[in-house]
Structures are given as C-alpha cells and as structure tokens.
Image (cartoon, rainbow, N blue to C red; front, side, top):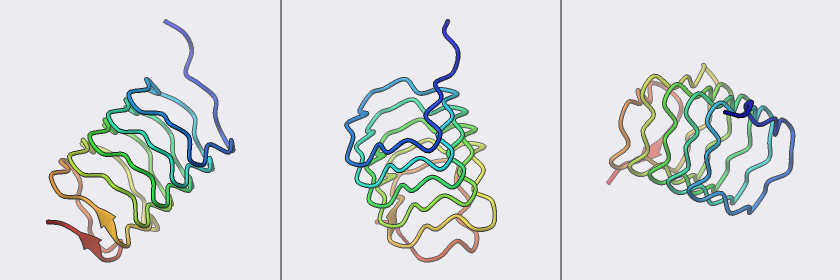
Length: 115
C-alpha cells in the first residue's frame, strides 16, 4: 500500500477525479472548484481550507475527512457519506446540495439545499 497522496495547495480546478482513491490524501488548501469527484474515496482525507465551490462530490466517501474551514458553496454532496467528517466552525455550505447525504450535522454553517 502506498503512502497517502500529497496534493496540498494544488490547483485541481475542473479536474475529473470520479472514482479516484484519495483516501488519506493531503488536500489542504487545494483548489477543487468545479472538480468532479463523484464516487471518489476521500476517507480520512484532509481538505482543511480547500476550495470546493461548485464541486461535484455526489456519492463520494468522505468518512472521517477533515473539511475544517473548507468552502463548499454550491457543491453537490448528494448521497455522500460524511460519517464522522469534521467541518469546524467556519465551513461554508451555502447552496450546497445535501439530499441523501449521511452522517452530517449541518449546524450553523449557512443555508443548505435539501430536496
């Protein structure tokens, strides 16, 4: 088994990461605006301060992922698994699609779209 991927601060805007195995990856401060990562495995990935605006993460596995202070505005997280994921106090979820997502307590992170 290889070591986790170091993609910290990388520009992955509009990248196609569908089905990718990024478990344990370091994606701190990465730019993933408009990226497609449907069905990707992001279990235990560190997405602290990542820019995920308008990213498609439908059906992604984000169990135990760190999304502290991430920008998820307009992202698609429908049917994603966010069990035990960390959002911190400043994650931005305005207009984020969360229908069918599991394991997420949206708390006071802004308005979300469900349904």
